[in-house]
Image (cartoon, rainbow, N blue to C red):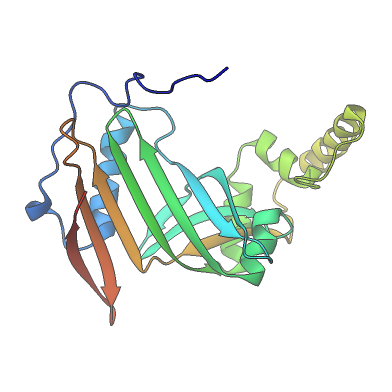
Length: 213
């Protein structure tokens, strides 16, 4: 039986304004403005889709949490032994996509990825909530779980380790820094004349370009 996906509302009746002419000189400034604004209206505004490619060039994507925006870098974190960590080691480029349907806004960026210094990654890990640290020490991310009881045993062992070593981070825990070469801001409009602004880096400077919808 076919089912139609038309008719479901995509965005609220009232959408925020986006004055492209008044956009700041750098994407970081505009992104932080939009992030703060989204945080007043939607849950998890810092949730972001991280897209990578595997060794066969096949795209892969998952939702993670943005850790920080500092200078020209957007930071996420994971184990270097996770599928995304392995993919980034072989092809250190990624795309990040933020989507806030409650505001009719999307931000897309892509560029090379580098690993932060080990001490920075360790500090990132020890700042995580206890349950998140336990989860990281369980390991085996995305491997096949044959027996759910195995997860309980591994979690109990990891919990004991974290309690005894509260300041220790796994050597594999890595904060990854995405340095975008392009950042695009998309504002929905009910008349379908969506506003799109792209920042493109050239020779160390940002250039703004308005795009067709």
